Amino acid sequence: MSPDFDVVELGPADSPSVGETAPDFTRPLVNDEYWEDTSLSELLDSGPLVLLFHTMDGDFPATYIWQEIRDRAWAETIDVVGLSISSPYEHKRFIDDHDLEDYRLFSDPKNLIAEQYGIAHDLDGMEGISEPRPAAFVLDTDGTIEYAWVSTEWPEFPPYDEIEASIDEL
Amino acid sequence: MTRPDITVYRLQACPYCERVIRVLNDLDLEYRSRFVEPPHSRRNVVKRLTGARTVPAIVDERTGVTMSESARIVEYLERTYGERPEIGAESVTEADDPDEEAASLTATEVSE
Image (tube, rainbow over all chains, first blue to last red; front, side):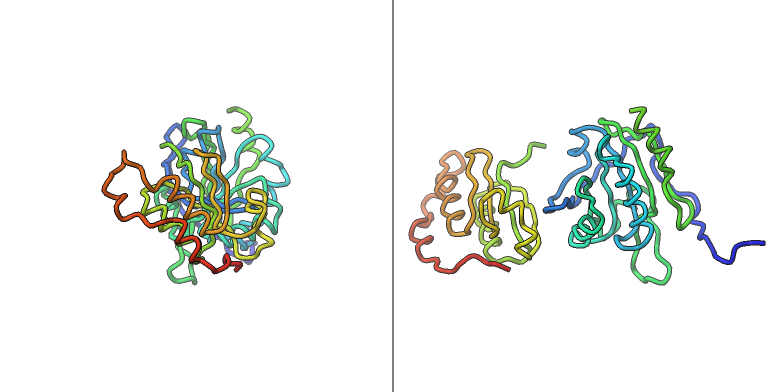
């Protein structure tokens, strides 16, 4: 018997693959105190990182994903930066609400970075709103993608153990 | 890309902040912007830097100066960067007297 709910198929994404260089971009990067235009390459100057595309702050996938990452304390090992279409004000609230002071979030309301990464997703029933499909990229200091995961269903959650394994291999 | 020496802590749509930004632009100075939120309770970063929670506030890493209050900041910027012959001597002729301008400003800093 099939379940009485539908998981939406998102189909294949056209995203950069392992071994390729992650496309650079600049957007306001929000921490627990302020936000400031910051480029991905600037962040990479300080070391490898995890770039995590997520859905709007406040929906349940974004909340679950960030609670899991916080509880796994990834920040103790690597810089983890998020990106969603939420505004800097929403990001600040989200950081406060979920004790994410060790993490920072890029704000991209126009969803152009998701388009650049080939993972934009038009939302059904919310005319004019497009957001990234959840995706995670583990980047080495030179910006090389060492690990990539892009969701193909909605909702779908990151394979946390796999991502941790790739972080350990850096 | 080298990062600018001057950092401005600002609030969106705050006229006192915009005044500082205009002077920075007039003086052709590069700066980075750090935006804080309206409630004073959410401006601890500014308090740590300047001892007060008001914006605008600037940090100039080249001179080691940290200060708040737009009139003081404008005076500082014009005094420090306003007459730079190597940039263009013709700009000096129109220079305002920074002290006079600062003295004419009686408004207090924006608090919201």
